[in-house]
Image (cartoon, rainbow, N blue to C red; front, side, top):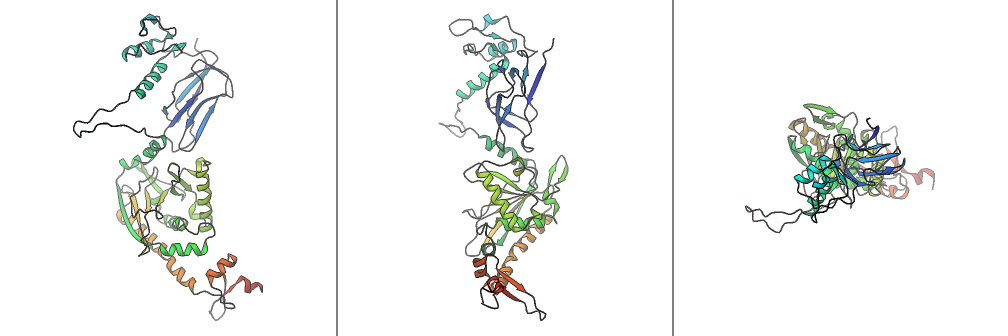
Length: 419
């Protein structure tokens, strides 16, 4: 009679994750578990999670610690009876599995387990801690042996000797996964010098939240332009071009933690102040490990801002489900300019289309110079307080008074209220 069992599968916690990493298995196959027990711990690009059993019963694992499993994959089975794979029957040939002292092992072995043990010549491995040894048990031990015996042979061509290795971290694997789209696309890049000195001057005068970062202005202007150049919110897949409905700007962050691209949703519908607030909130959540799924997915284009570093220029890699990314290099102190590099998918965007987009972004960002120049002439017509001084005093600046003779004047809030 076939045993009734419940499947435990990898949930889909992040639509961008093609795999999760199994961190910890808290029981052994054959153990009895209770409803509410944590049976598996795993890692996604967002955070670490626990799988809590919803049932009482015997568990049989179909995964090992360190495995990478895709969403929907079965990780374990739970049943009211101990589960043995229907294709694996307990072997009567236990006498063929002996240790180096010639003793027969106490556990029972499935036929598949015996086959793998013989094939890999691991008769001397001590299985005494197991009641039943299945093919999964043997494969787990093979993985453990492989890790312990990793070595590198010298490369005769390059005379490379005395090598060691560094295991690739889970975060790096995910980064490779998300950026491997580069290998499938036809990328091109354009760059243009943009005067950002005036952006710094402008943001220092008007911002109370991020007075020393130009990223909010760049995201603000970028989101407005993308509404006109909608292919910059698209991606290529299966010989089709998919276009995101929303303008969600991603911005790269790496502050003493693994690189993340945080999603500033509906940026085209937000004011500069709201964008500043979102950047602060998302960055705080990143630092405090409080990011939620929506903070990491569905960005339509990414900005990688290295203007505060010593990097003059770079070509950033396009993220998954996007067609372009913008990299911002260090500002040239003498010229007040920074090199903006646009890396884009040529399967979607033509050179002319990309060039027009980047040119319009340059015009919009450099227009803040005119705003600064006009602001410099504004003073209260009563007390002559400048716009900058009024901003420092009350946080509002000057109020504009329109007259019939079109000779507009400005007044500070102190004079307006009679102080």
